[in-house]
Image (tube, rainbow, N blue to C red):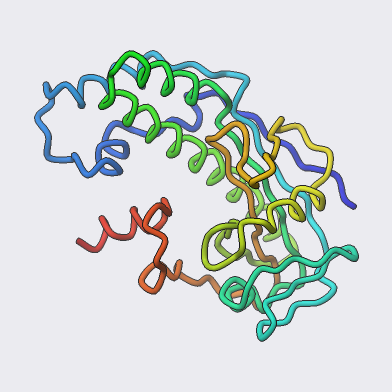
Length: 235
């Protein structure tokens, strides 16, 4: 098992913009003085989670990948990625298995706002947390692309358990494969991550790898952040 390549960020380094938050909330046309816009602006100015946003990956050579069965094997560990994800990374010779979290702060504030009855504000805070962890992972994925690119290799999109028909319960195998790491993310018996604003998954690496768009058009998962972004970009 290889070492975990760790990264940490301040909120300022990975914070979404006001426009990105409003676009995610499908509220881009709101007036600047609308309460939702004011809350987003004030919140982004006030948030400061300098030590809680962490992530990284381990690199492993792929021993076996079968698109027909949807199975991938690395380091004597078998993952049931499913045919869809295996198809996207079928040219990969290596894989990066990643974890990333925005920390507990967003969940605590979202829960507090809900308890106070501030439902709109809680929903916005939850959205900011989702975008923050994705932007942190964007930076990590960009660093990975630069790193492997020095050896003439390319990377795929990132894919996570619970999406693209990759069974959520494979999360346990993924965590076992990654092993000891600096993120502080734990897994519940139902395979949900704590802190809640966390992501995990795989990125394929290989010389003949081609970049594929996410298969959101044929996906039925309405909660997927990538599906939401695609739906807005083509509307």
